[in-house]
Length: 169
Image (tube, rainbow, N blue to C red):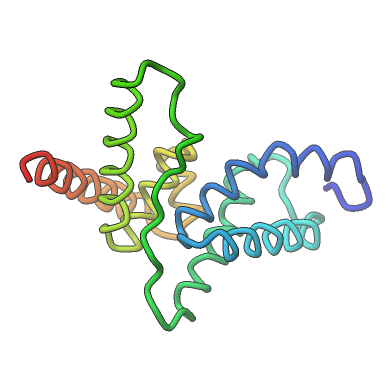
């Protein structure tokens, strides 16, 4: 696919660096782990490039590699990761009140997402942060489409409950 084509490799790195690293950061909750897994993802993609089916989309394929690596890392982890909050530079540039309100919502949402079980957090990440559709999520997570629908439904309901609980607290 792109083996030996330095320009194509650079373009892929530039295009997928932020979204892939962001996904790995939210899944691992650790910047060093996310960076390491990002590099490992691209190394594996480069090595397996000749096996990539060019009739399929690249994004679900590379995200499958990344989420599998993150899952494997989580299985090996002996301790839970600390919650990852969103950085201030991710906030929209608006008036102070809007920034504060937006920040509070994002922090609350980030905390709520971090409270979800791994299998629900992964589905939320792939659907809402990466924009994958249900068939792509099913292939990426290697689960049936019905399981994707069920997990997505339960994860959204749990998030709604968690966000409602935080608002009343």
